[in-house]
Image (cartoon, rainbow, N blue to C red; front, side, top):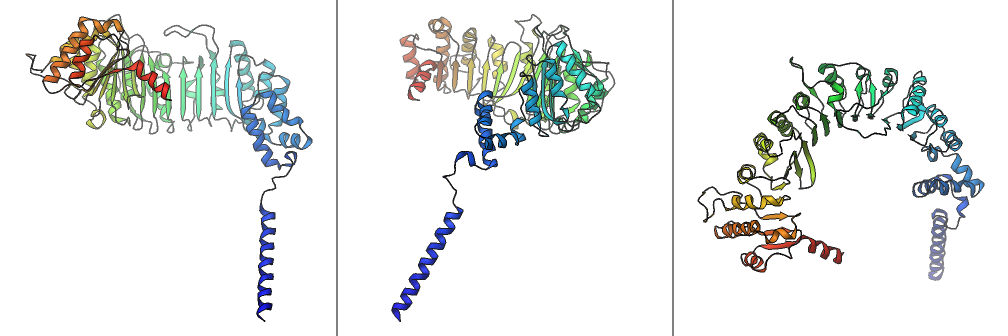
Amino acid sequence: MDYANANGHQTTDDQQALTHQGEFIQTRPDTGSHISELPQELLVEVFLIVQATHGLKNWRNVTYVCRHWRLAALNAAVLWTDPPTHLGKYTCLVLERSKSANLHISLGAHTSKATISAVLRHICHIHTMKIYLGIDAMAHAHDILLSCCNIPWPKLTNLEIDLALSVPTVPSVTLPTINLSPSVIRQLTHLQSLLLAHVTFDWMALSCPNLTSLVLDNTTLETTISWEQFLGTLDQMPHLESLSLGLDVILQSSHPPLAQTRCIRLPRLQYLKLDDLYPYSVSYFLSHSILPKLNRLIINIWWGDGNDDHSGIIQTIFLTLANGDFGLLDSILVAQYHIGLYIQGKVPAVDVFLPPNGLYDNHNHIHQFIQGLSVITSETSGALAEVRLELHLNCDELATLLGNLPQLKSLVVHHPSVCSPLAQALKSGTLDSSDTTTLFCALEKVSFPTMQPVYLKSPAMQDFCDSLLARHRSGFGIKTLQFRKCRTIPHDMMKQLEDIGICVVDEYESVLQRLASA
């Protein structure tokens, strides 16, 4: 009886094992299948990888391996959505194979007029399109687009039209443009991204409520528009996240209207780039725009108004900065006519380029910039710990600039002539100075990344080192002094610095060591 029961249990266990083995055989992948017999879905994934990593000729070869592969490739419209536009008949073949899939089109210098016509006839299937053509070919492409305005363009979400020019773009110089018909503009209602360069168009025909990115570069308008019309159109783009405009060629007026205009709100705008010949329009636009999410701002003023008073535009920029979403700014770049604010020392937040007007020795914009800093809330400017100088400043200008930054810890000097006035400023408030005002108490590091070795033996450098010694004796010495190369520093100077605990860093040697250890 016990033997029968044991035998019965053994039979049951064997049956369960066989059943489990059968289920495993049925469910595990058949890794022994021939590659030509793989299912179409898997083949298409393989083909997409080949298409992305190999050239056009290598990709086309998969359609000649076997009948199964060829049928799988020809029936997968997703494989034919990026037709090359310089191969004539093959381009047309790819267009046919794409069926109703979304097309990604790029028309360039090597695209013939016949191919342009063939491609644009599929406008109802085009998803993204870049057109970079000369005047003659661009006019032909425009005529084809105009003839297609009787049908909707529901899939077109990204469009770039850039007239290829053989001359460089220079501010205030009139360049050729292509006229874009209002009928074509009205077809762009589904766009999410639009770039127009060297194009003339009707601003009032532009209606793109879903637009997230708008770039207008050297564009002109068919008719003059008012500020109300200009801002009103932008106000109808609530999803806009990126905006780049040349105000001088759009509004064609250096002065804003005397009458007040209502403010517009662009709740999602994060990136803003404005170019203009004069500061008036930029100031007016910024002061009439509510941009709560703005975190990147670029301002280019080309010529100015003949004087060096930039206080108005700087004040407006800082008000925009205070009302935006720029995060914690910790670094400032001060150049001859360029002011930059950065996050984590590298991530650009604000870049303002001001016109020189020939006043290379006048630094009024520096003082105006410092006055503008007072507008920023402490949450934004409280961590301004690094300043990069790319221009010559005297002692008073250094004191004005750096003395208003109590958290300053790092100073990067790109102009060697700053060495002597910096030494004077650093001595302020030390035991060796009659001036009782101590500047840059939190300063820990000074860098000279572009200083040539010959300057390391100059009297100005000796004065600078003496100022560091004076600060150390007064209880607020720095910790690090960095040069591009410091092999030529006199031995006694190096010993003095090391004796007071200053770490002298050779940037060139540090880079070599990092490369050697990598």
